[in-house]
Length: 261
View 1: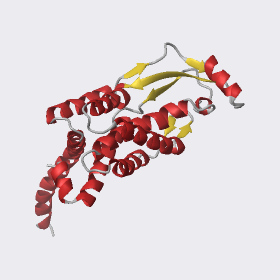
View 2: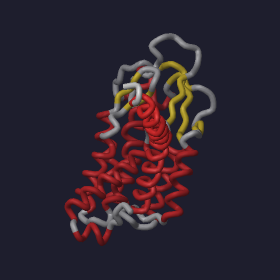
View 3: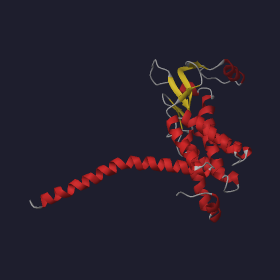
View 4: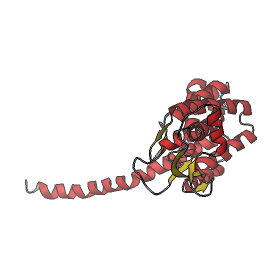
């Protein structure tokens, strides 16, 4: 038995090194797959490889940037909103915990610019994009939930799955499905989960922290940028729509939509 111990210790060293390499390389592999899948999705909606790469890294960096859309804190609804509530006989608190409202560069502004550019290049029609955006907005609005001290949360699978199904149904053709999925997923979630909920009476008061705190609550339209926001929703919607198209389309799919390389 004593003779086996040196052999065991000799084998333990390379096994430990292999385990350490796997531990170090796993995050790098995950990052690479994320970047590659995101680039592939953007290429499927008509962007070149280098443009797609710039958008990915720009969105990653942009996820760290929140652009204020109102100077100072907001503690109550504006007068025009109160008049609307009064005309509709809506009873809800008119004041709420102070908030700082902003838009996220990587999770909101960049997806909006990408969607506008997709429309500009004629990858899908404005009417279909508007219909997809509205349908996804309705679903995400119903699924979103205001959580105190956190913001408006939404099951991560709802927006991309809804956008993919809507895009495949509305596109009636394999070429425009990914583009339609991106616009519907990103813009529909932006409107339904964020904008519509923020404009719903009573939602902002429901976001107040459970205990009294002095600091204002930061609310960023677009979620937490890339990893939990509008940008990722659009990317997942494109990949899901492309998968459905490839399953249903066969040879047509292979001609119109590039597969992962």
